[in-house]
Amino acid sequence: METEYAKPIQYYLVFDSDFLNMNQLLNKTLNINFIKYQCLNCGLDKKIYRQGYCKSCFFEIPQAADWIMKPELSKAHLDVEDRDLAFEKKVQLQPHIVYLANSSSVKVGVTRKGQVPTRWIDQGAHEAIEIVEVPNRYLAGITEVALKDYVSDKTNWRTMLKNEVEDENLVAWRDKLKTYIPEEAKPYFIDSNTETEIEFPVLQYPKKPKSLNIEKMQHYTGVLKGIKGQYLIFEDETVCNIRGNEGMYVSIEIS
Image 1 (cartoon, rainbow, N blue to C red):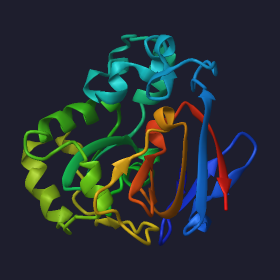
Image 2: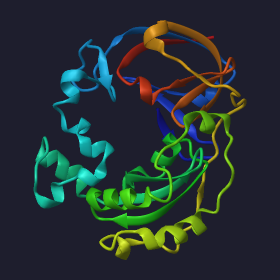
Image 3: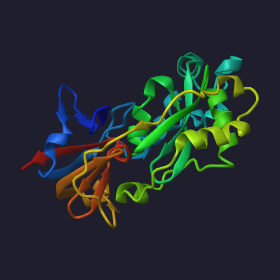
Image 4: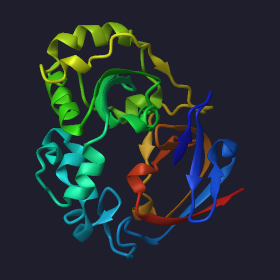
């Protein structure tokens, strides 16, 4: 789903030639039916392996290379190719942000500057702050690795969806972590910003969220009660991770 920063966040489910504002569907019944697979790269009806790609595409295309999930492995700044140097330079050699986000607890993360605050919204964070802004993905990656010794780099999706999250002073966290930033990245430390607060369109949080596996179930019907992160939250406490189901071709009926 694409998002728009507003109070609350506006969510849009994008189709080939149209889009749907999901906020308008709160309290509506959705009927979701699995139709087929559709790899995000080749478009073929092949079983999805990871990240919305079939197995062959996942191990071939630059969009699924190891440096995507582990930015510290980036090498474009050294003019070293992994799978496609032109693509890697385009993505890696641009400003990146290392940030703190509070979704299930305080975590550290990396994103391209142009993905702020979209990345925070996708993670279901209700508050976030930038720590450093560096000129390439590698510097962001080694900074994240260094800070992972002192703060988590993972989100507990169940805690996030239950909204069992305490407010944190992210400015204080930022200042406390400054000393652990690698020397190469310290000149890029941001010391004059404030937290960004995020409000999600949720009418009812689940107490015991259960994940929808549409591939296995084939169809599901439920009343939409909220959207947080990239999750649809239903009245029966079923939750559907839209990002996690990329590559699944489905039909959605509204009643």
